[in-house]
Image (cartoon, rainbow, N blue to C red; front, side, top):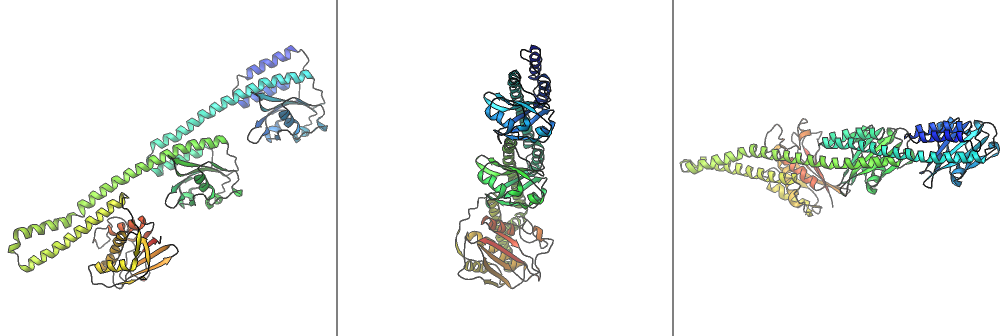
Length: 553
């Protein structure tokens, strides 16, 4: 037992504490200090509980003689029990007889502790925790014992503060190194898909999570679409869609803030893939570029986990880099796309225009130099071919101009009320064929659309049915909910199954090899510019059936 004026005890303790101040690792520091404190005060146990500021309670952090206290993660509310009183009253508390005292921690009684002395750990007027010692035999702790433990506690508080500062600086450095890992990937990759695949692998490693995923915002639909995932690959494979503001990811995007779900079973989660894969906890942050939400980045664990403020801060730092990388990748993809479009345009201009242009030039040259020597019949035949090739040249130029404007997204869709029956009848009358086209559309049916774009779409569909199909050719319309579905069908051979997957690709002309192969691609682009679509519906009984889907309003 420490005695008043025991200079040797104090000297030994002072040496230990000064040595401990040189330790910067908190775990090593506490283990070393508690052993020396127990020896100097001649007690059987010594323990330190540190304050968890987020939950405002005390957590057993280190102990000698009471190792169970730490192993079981004992927590004591501030103000309750022995340690809680020490912290709340900010002063020493002595329990000479534990058996008859208010002690919340069951381990103290289980281990047979009879007497306790505890003092607060205070630094810069903040309670950091509690230091207490105990004996297995009843003991009356003296004022000198209390004074000595308070002196020790003062030095321990300084040491803990220094160790925490060092740990904070180390974590900050490690965070920067981890963020740099992400930045290096972001700078090295330009294409979006390989970029996201590499980034998510590193993000999962950095946050020590089991899953990581990126959902990107579809601005037109106002939905988040799963674009890449590791650990829950099905999320991206199924292209899961989450409405803005709904569910976990939808809230993260709409509220533009980090959201943590400690227990998925008790939370509103729309994405079924998360539950199917047994995800227990989630942390998500928005991806923001400039002032725009680009999407959501989230990580998850298969075991319950409470993500810390440090985890949240780190994921937000990473998300800022990911958002920059996504914007850069999108710019790169757009540049690549435009370059490819230029190449395509040059290719079609040199290939598709060459035949009619050569014919027009050759026939014109023949008529110019030898026209007066030709028979009336030969001259008439050349003029017919000249007209046909000039008309083909005109259509090609119109298609190429349409294509270039659609690629540049420079086609203004000027909506106005269009009487559908009247427009289709005019298109059918203008087709260069005597084939009958039946228009089975109610005369009063209207749609809000760009009439020029509709004329281009139906000219292509009806023209194809006349050229490649067989009568009867029928145009029908049906109104379903907020969409209008207009079908153009014929009774010909239909589209060959091997061509169907490539039907709307540019320059695809099939086995007949007629036309430029641009018409259907342009028609579909016009349909999508209206917020609709153009699809091919294979018919089991032969014939071809195309369906134009348009929003009514």
